[in-house]
Amino acid sequence: MPTLSRSQLLVYGALAVVLLLIGMRWIRGADQRGSEAGGVAFASEGDSGGGSFAVSEGGGEDVVVHVAGAVRDPGVYTLPAGARVTDAVKRAAGATAAASLDTINLAARLADGQQVLVPAAPETGAVASAGIAPAATDGPISLGSATLEQLDTIEGIGPVTAQDILDYRDEHGGLSSVDELDDVSGIGPATMEALRDRLQP
Image 1: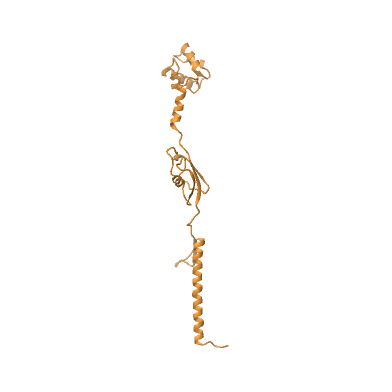
Image 2: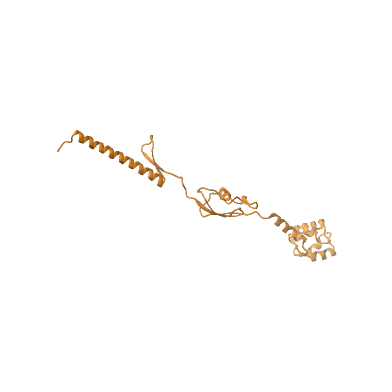
């Protein structure tokens, strides 16, 4: 077996060192590329027994939601992962003055494809006027649901007699006929005729 000269050993040793450095650089570059592409990071802790790796949680997918109802600019919006219902409402330019935000959970986490519907509060003015309207009409009033104000509009009945009628109705569990009001004190024949014209069972 031929023996290698000292100069040949030095050349082979230098080549081995160069190859080793090239291999280490290639491995390090592959690790960095893998970390950027897949979110996997390798870490070697000095106080741990061996190497470890962890998956990065950054960069979640966005969610697409439909914001509708009492908002200023309803539509379909894209928000970052982990966003809440309140973020979707703000993205739609905020709620309108008629919105009833107390009826929805603003802290709920959004899901992809979700519809966020912001309801509107009922119009109190319309409800109030609807409650007053029956007293102002000339049609017959229901005996079972007549209010003191409605009974007071009938000719010959004042607030006191109207209250007596309501008390009588409550005591007897309702009224099935206008004729039963003949037993209420203060109601005479003329008043009964007026009651028959304005009340119905």
